[in-house]
Image (tube, rainbow, N blue to C red):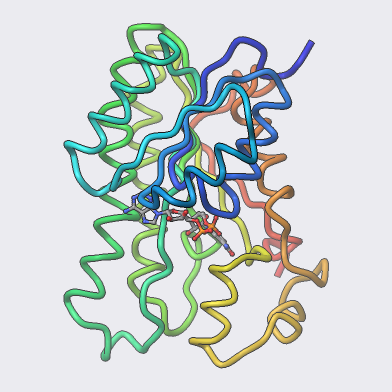
Length: 249
Ligand code: NAD
């Protein structure tokens, strides 16, 4: 039997690198998928590419009216939400903390923190009514330790850990699980943008990763699939690294 047979999954940032690969994986394992993204164009392209079992909703995850709308649309389309991959995020500006503006900081916090909060605020009541569900919040290795020149991003990804722990506590009595995932650099547009801002390359950064390479989006989706599936029904409130051995450093 497929690992997500009969389940309905909502994925924010669903038209991005990790979101799309995870959607593909979820579909292959029998799920119906609702993709949420701010970019209507890439959503349409992604829907074409993935074919059946996919609904798309354009939304800005930092806006509560948009969040209510994508949650309502998901329930209208498929009747329930079993899995919520709270994944949308931006990298923000690359600059020392002293050069980050209030606007730079607030924009990253609005999407990466408020967006994760609002998603759970409106999805969790549905899961509570069902008495089941799995939420996977996207953090990063940047949610567990610091690095230079991305202070709003580091702050936002640490906040995702706090939100995850708070929600896991409150949700356990409803048999709803909440975990966070923490990837090291992934071979993606986001890393190309960060490499440019930091003045470095994949080759150089890969030397800081014990397994000697960036993750592929598939490496991340393997972990997300496990947390989405019934193979992880006793796991909640956890921070899962998928980091090529960086935890050992
Ligand atoms: P990506 O840029 O390819 O995908 C992010 C998606 O989020 C995009 O499709 C974008 O349109 C969407 N988005 C941005 N702002 C939004 C908003 N306000 N409302 C709705 N959608 C919005 O990036 P990715 O590499 O797939 O990253 C996905 C998540 O993984 C992010 O939270 C990121 O911080 C995290 N992450 C990425 C890496 C990496 O190296 N790429 C490493 C660790 C963690």
